[in-house]
Image (tube, rainbow, N blue to C red; front, side, top):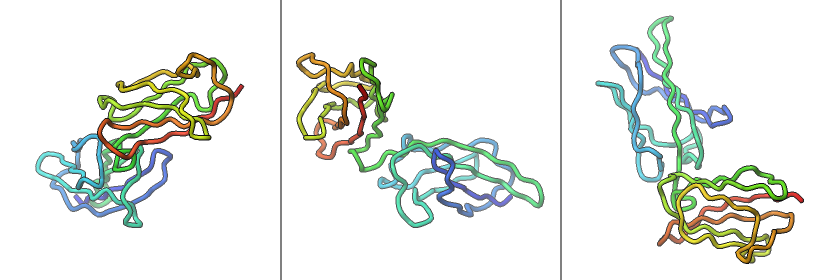
Length: 185
């Protein structure tokens, strides 16, 4: 069996195709580590029994995968017979100190709670929200994922419509992760 690895973004865009060796039988399932995956820290190890492969975490241009969710499709072929195994991986790299930050809904309507989440979810972060002028709107302090922002400042006032920047930093690290959020009045 010849094996091919196809790497897709969460939107379905193919970013890399690789020939990844052979196996004595079609792959049935694939284990991978580390989870979540940081391409800058080394290869992603894929395995199924006696078969294993070290994926370098790069796209067809040779660039490391960006933070996000990817689908890895491993195709086993022998003659006209094919089988496919798919695994979903979360990539978090050096950007944002290893955090993948999201907030929803975005845009948010007046008065709705906004759920702010990050991966890895077990990682505690210092969470702050700024307006587009760089003014601190709310400091949540250090907490675990998820957090809910009720669109109020640290003093309890309702915020105006506009664009806000969510900033999450792993305590002790310099580089924060950022996420832009629109509030509609």
